[in-house]
Image (cartoon, rainbow, N blue to C red; front, side, top):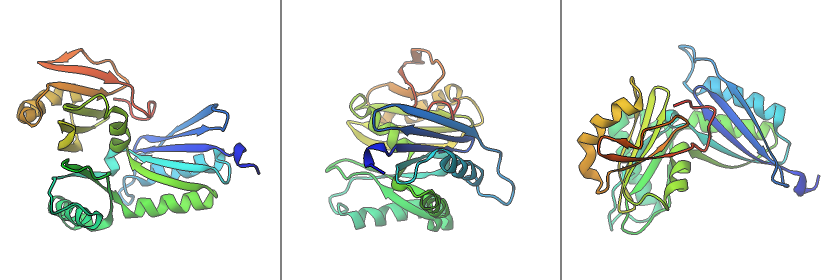
Length: 252
């Protein structure tokens, strides 16, 4: 089969379901989305969604196509890596990330593989801990479907890349059903990260968080990735809404 006929696939895995985008070489795209049941007491939180992803790949992926996977923030554990002139190499940054995740998660950190962002001199970084069992299952699913797995990325990293040029100072807000991810950026450098369950709508929880953490940034600006409409201001914070890259799975 000619490479020109192969597709580029993007698979978004979320606790509520999965979304597969298939883009052909001529630019035309198709999207397939399914919901996932709640996990049983014996299952990891990602297992029902992974089962749906395997069905999607088996039904809609052509062998030989490239596959990129994006994981919802519910499946990821993050840490901000403080900048240090003595911690600049890949191995040194990885060791710092492991120590930070171990400090916050305890023994659970040993079951995570760590992905690092690109190091920038003088800037803090972001480390993402991804469940080893999920990564293994995704690699096996791609192999079974005869796909070329090009990357597995956390959602925060993908959305952050989309707005780096428009937010040098302020907060990136990723609201979701029962979940909130909040990243503070100060002069282009990540400075604060919250990634946790949320029992109330993000618009209700945010004012308290921002009041506590307002000194972390200089400019009171929020970039909110949401399908829902937000007011232009939240207290004295300016709000700019952006459509999430993977609309249709997460609903906040």
